[in-house]
Image (cartoon, helix red, strand yellow):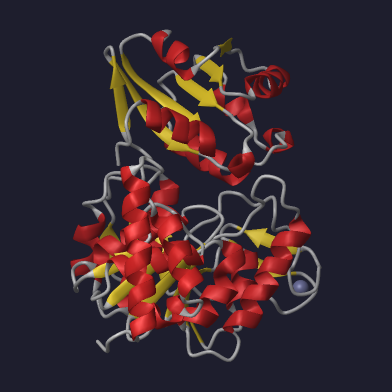
Amino acid sequence: MTQLPLRAQLASALGRSAATLSRMTGRGDGSVIGGRVGLMLEPDLLRKLARDRKLALVSATNGKTTTTRLITSALLELGEVATNAFGANMPAGHVSALSQHKGAPYGVLEVDEKYLPEVLDTTGAGVVCLMNLSRDQMDRAAEIWLLAQKWRRALSGRPTHVIANCDDPLVTWGASTAAQVTWVAGGQRWKEDSWCCPECGGPLDRKDADWACRECTFHRPEPHWVLDDDAVLDPRGQRWLLDIQLPGLANRSNAVMALAVAETFGLPVDRALPRLREVTSVAGRYTTVQRDGRHARLLLAKNPAGWLEAFDVSDPRQPIILSVNAQGPDGRDTSWLWDVDYRILRGRPVFVTGERRLDLALRLDVADVPFALCESFSEALAMQPPGPVDVIANYTAFQQIRSEFGRAV
Ligand SMILES: [Zn+2]
């Protein structure tokens, strides 16, 4: 690997010191502040740090942190990998991730959907993994369409190899200007944002997994990789049982995307898959926290599509605690609660907490789901019998629970 120019070396080193200071003073893991300091001193730092590495960028509304982790785990089979493991998914986080592993020949970077064009342009990443696009909190359909259009422009005319989920029509449209695309049939649980053809606005006809526009030629491409319940069919038609430890269909879909990305790095399924099976939790998600004989499993749901995935993972035989906040990162408006169908929780003991518990309570009441209202997560947990309980929380509620129980990873 070539040496960084002196100014970039200095910026990178100072950024790392700032990150260490930030960690020591208890201000989080420091990855964002460190990257910001570095970028202030050397605005071109990300480009310089990205040079001479083989990089994959991972973007989606849901599952990008998990998929980034799975791809990283697979590529460790090949050598050192730089990655932003804690979801700091804007350029400052990328600078920090690459600075911390200066000699790593590989990099896997989770990228915020809106930043993908900029980060692709800056890093010149050779591989981009695109999974799903849906409304995040209060985004509107037109906004995610514009986002997909920006992806199209960013990918057009580049040598980038894109791995994209062809079960999501908007992702398919966003990816289809790329020079080379590997299509993955990864499933699509949340369909509410894709009834219209992104190309012409006509209606999309769906039959099983297949979809096509009634009015133009836009249709689902033939997939190279297919998620088939608990197994994957690779491009040669060979079937592999996934058998990963992360729960739920959404994570099996993430795993198939990771296998397809790993193959573009020259890593075959038989070497990548055992690495994916080693991953048990991702940035605190799916971990179990314990108190007084209660085992609470933490599930994160940031938007309506995320709630469906969490319901899929959660065990219907167990009680469930729901916690909703509405601070900055959550979005202050909770009207998205009305987009989620909570009727699936009928028949389970349901406990409601978080700053916006009254909003959630009203929503559940209208859906005829009985619940108990709790002042705090601790109170909700204390009301459980000993044994397992599932917890679904949105972003800051999830972080509060994690910090109360220690930052288990
Ligand atoms: Zn159309």
